[in-house]
Image (cartoon, rainbow, N blue to C red; front, side):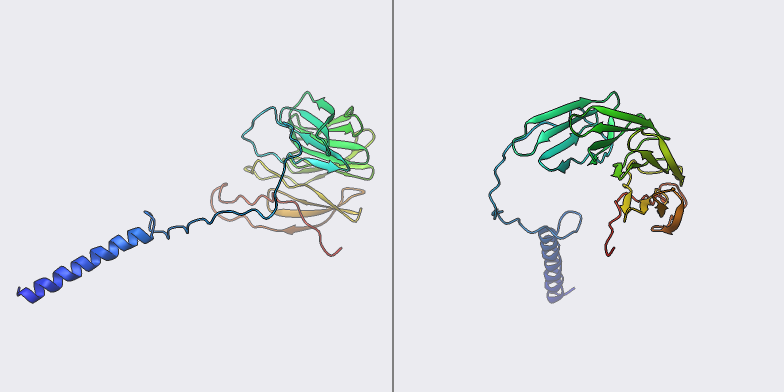
Length: 250
């Protein structure tokens, strides 16, 4: 091999090594583009904390939809240990506190002078909005992981095993049950029912289907498949509807 060819090969080798080092410099170790440097954050609005109160007495690895409810000047919070509190929105002062014998897994829902919650003992509990005193507790077929809905004279609750209950707001008596069912494997989360026009209840289920149920009778009006299960295993076939339906144009 003459000297010119040796110099050419050496030059190409050095060039390739330089490209490799450049790639490693520009890309991450997994050959992905390196992220851009973050610019300093300059807040446009200065936030000042007015008050804070602890609202959780028990940690849990289960995904629970325990979202605070704000009605007027009162904030209602619940935690997995079974405590629910009403706090003054203006100053954080505790108005009342109620400790249930069971853990809380959904809610609170506040309307019509009442506070509705789902518990881990497969029950729905209704409290008086004014002072937190218990009005009733109604047993259902399984846990109510989605927030119950208070509408008119009914409390609507969906159980994780695929049943939709209408409970009398005064007595807690079951008025009707719409049985849908659930696959053998589902996610530990659940979408909440939505009442439309005081006539229908829209509810998404763990098999990817949505039902429209008559609010007065529980009769199925229509059913649509939102997601389709595919795959060989139960895990691959998970199509749970976990987001709450949003109604527009009615």
